[in-house]
Image 1 (cartoon, rainbow, N blue to C red):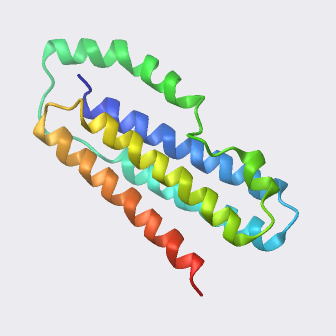
Image 2 (cartoon, rainbow, N blue to C red; image 1 turned 30 degrees about the vertical axis):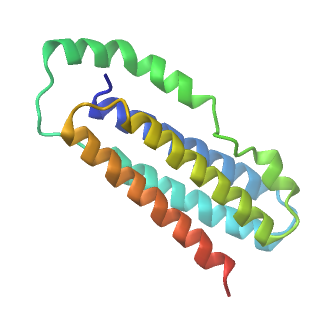
Length: 152
């Protein structure tokens, strides 16, 4: 069972991964237009992570849930920390057009949504399900923003 704190910690780490990857690729890009786009995406990921970090629950944890939270927090964060969810900075650095960057960024966001939907299947607390649905909705909004960037 995942607690809301577990979900929040995983989601924040995913967003940190995205921010770090976009930022590094931005600094390494030789195309100024692409570098600017990647920097903006990194800023979006940072703001997204800040939003996710505010998710809370008013429902008190049981003693068993508190023990699970303490035991699982490090394991879950370590599992997610090293996985950029298919968004490799080298892929973005090699991108030769803004369209290519947007396509790869969109793939990253879609992978993140799939991960969040996977996690949601393990939730048995209605409040946690509701909060995860909010996270997924925010990721879909990010996809819409990417689509807007693709169309002039």
